[in-house]
Length: 532
Image (spheres, one colour):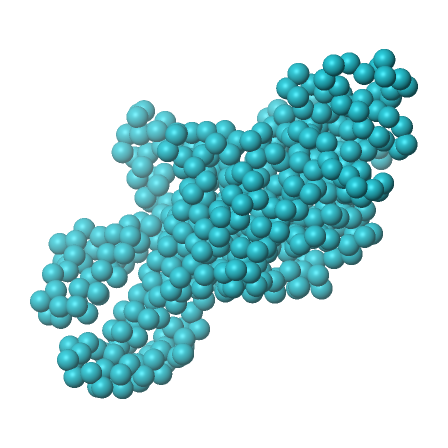
C-alpha cells in the first residue's frame, strides 16, 4: 500500500479509538513501512518466488546468472546488501550464502572447529535469523533517512521534493534477498534433517543445500577422507527437506543437491538393490573389489556382492569403509545428479577440486542429456589457488597451441616474478570471465564464494594491526580505515546511525513527544560527520 494510503487508513483507525489520540498516523505508517516482513516464513515465501523467477530467467538467458557471498554474521550480510544497492542500485540476482564451514569455524560455542558437522546444528538456523534481522534493520535504516528527508521537505514547503521522496518510499527495494543455506549432510538421520530444515525455513531460508556425505563422517568438500551414502539415504533427506517446505507453506522452496563424489573415494555401506540396474545396483557397481571364483577366496569378515554377473569381494579398509574404483568420480557425479533431479531436487552442486570450465561443462552436458534444464550452484572456493590454477590453464593452452612457453616454469607460476607477464594478464582475464563463461557453457545458475569475509576480516585486521602497533600508530586507523570510509562514502563511518541511533531517537519522539530525551543533539560527536 502506498505510504499516503497507509496514513489515510491509519487516520481512520485511530479516529475509531479515542484513547489512541496521542498516536500520529504518520508515525504508525512509518513503522509499518519499516517492518515489511513480520516473520521468517514471510521472508521464505517472498524470497522463494524471487529465486524461482531467477531460475526461469536463467533458463531463457544464461547471462542472467546469480551470485552471492558467504556470511558468518548478520552485520556482514547487511553491509554486503547496502554496498550492492549503493554501487549497482538494485539487489536483483544477488543473494547471500550461509556457509556451514564458517558456522563451524566462527559460530560454535566449542570454539573454532573444522567443517565436520561437529558444531551445534541450531547455530545454522540462528545465523539465518540473525542475517535477516540485520537485513530488516537495513530497510529500517534506509527508510528512516527517507522519512526524515520527507519531513524536512514538508516543513520547507517543497512540494516537488515531497512528491519525489514519497515515490522513493513507495518504490523502496528491500535488502531482503534469498539465502542459500547449508545444512551440511543433514546432521543425523532423515528425521533430524527434517527438524533442522523446519527451523531454517522458519528463520527465513527459501533455499537449502544438502550434501551426499555420511553425517557422522562429514568432511569439508575440499579435504580428503570424504564418504558418500547410497542414493536411497540421500533421497530420503531430500524428501524430508521438501516435506518441511510444504508443511510450512513454502511451496516454492528450493533444494540444492550437492554431490561430493568427484573427490570422495569411500562409502560406508553397500547399497540395497532389488533388481539389476536400479540405483542401488549402479552405486555398488563402482565399488572396487576382487573377483572371487570359490569360497576359498572369502576370508572371515569379508563381504561379497554381485557386479555385472560376477561375484566380487569389495576392498574394505581397516576403518570398515569400502573403496570406490579409481577414476570413477565423474561417472558417479553424473549418476548422483540425475538421481537427485529426478527425485525432488531443484538445483545441483558439484564440488570440484579446481575451477575449470571444461571439466564442469563435461559433467553438466552428460547430465543434460537426461535432464535438459539441469542447473548448478557452484562454489568459487577460496580453497582453490585461483592465481596458480588459471596461470597453469593458460600455460597449458598456450603450449597446446604451439606458443613459446619456455620463459615460464609451470610449477612456479604463483611466483610474484610472473605478476606483470602476458601469461599472468591472460590468466586474470580468464579469472574475471570465469563466472560469465561457466554460466554460459557449464550450466551454472548461481555462483558463490563460501568464505570471502573470513579472509577479508583477517587481511584487513592484519594490515591495521601491523600499522597501529607499529610506527604509524593512530594514523594506521585514520588513513587506512576512517578516511577511506569518508572518501568512499561507507555508511559505517556514522556508526551510531548505522546501529540505529537515529531510528531510536525518532521512536522516542513517537512515544513521548517533546519530552523525548534524544541522543542526536548538538553534543553528539557524530555531528562531525554530518556534511561529508
